[in-house]
Length: 473
Ligand code: BYC
Picture (cartoon, rainbow, N blue to C red):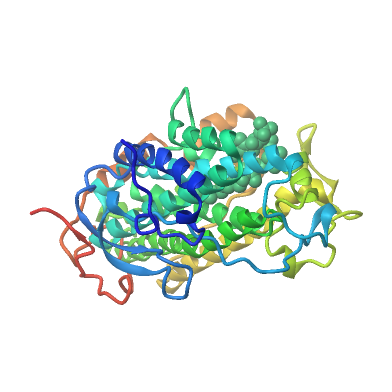
């Protein structure tokens, strides 16, 4: 059966109804997407009404339309920021030339690889989160999870649009591939490491949306500088949605911290676990895990791929247009740490080859701001404890530090010491069992699980006690 694709079903500003070839390609793909969503999307809630935000246009107000929707009926739209006439390439080797509205032949493989890698993360995260609805700490959190999930679905549509519209048959094959790989699957895993990690409870979910979605912000920002104009315009619109995902993560962890310090103060030994909460040490371990796997998502510190993408004008730096003076990144160097002969040394790398690390620097700074806000809550409760981002050398699987072992402060360790001590710094089996034991669904409007504080306010002006998801009796 062929689905009928119309502007009504697929809100868009890409003139879908005027482009028959694209329409036909998407009509082939859409039923496979829906099959994938039903099989791998949120389990157990597909028939329920969820108070969701749908983007129906790029006009102010149009991208934030709220209503009850059943998730399979969500209108996954295709939106690009409106075209800025006269835009030219503003970094790399082609500075000053007009941006490309079609894919230049010599950049086809590079662009396709970047778009497929970006696209692959979107369904992957939905797969990672598919069982979380069963243990949501409140209806508010349940709704936020589903909002994140449908928007990741829309981001997949965004990349599939680019593949179908600009890459012909290879693009159609890649779009099918995006629905065939599976997070964590041994034989057909998702492309990037963090997207194969299990996210099977809410502490990991909030850490994921804090740290892994934030990689999304920086990667989309770098791609939004692109000289391939449709990619730039797509990513600029995606960034407006990404902000909500990071809000869910940062405030989610923040609300756990708030509850933890409340419970510590109730306990004679300041023991949050004794009061049914999550202790700060365990929060730190999950922070260590998700931050380190997210650092890997920026790729190697020294990267010819990054240099090539910059030279080509395809992937820039975060806020390339406004933050830098030299947009060729030639003739300058970047000092970075490396490990040689078992010691940490500093080495100089030509700037273009260091651009993954330059983007990672911006990311680290942004993560630190979030951690500072959590620490403020702890400090104001009068508790002596500071959460901290671990060293960039800690628990890395990609780049210069992949082969060494270090503690969270960055001191190098012998492999045997790492093996015997890693459970002090990363969640161990006992931590996982304990955290999972806390995870029980709370479905009454206005009620919340013991281990997390309620939010300060609800969604779209609604109170916390609003019925964000209508569940069967
Ligand atoms: N895992 O030159 P290198 C998001 C591979 S998140 C596995 O060091 P490069 C979201 C690499 O592919 C944002 N493999 O790095 C968040 C390459 O392999 P090939 C997603 C890895 O290429 C939450 C080799 O190692 N977007 O949106 O400069 C929820 C050498 O690579 C990893 C993007 O990533 C890894 N972690 O940079 C939902 C943007 N890292 O090609 C969504 C598009 C590296 O030699 N992607 N490798 O076989 C890119 O810009 C680049 O592909 C990367 C890697 C930054 C990921």
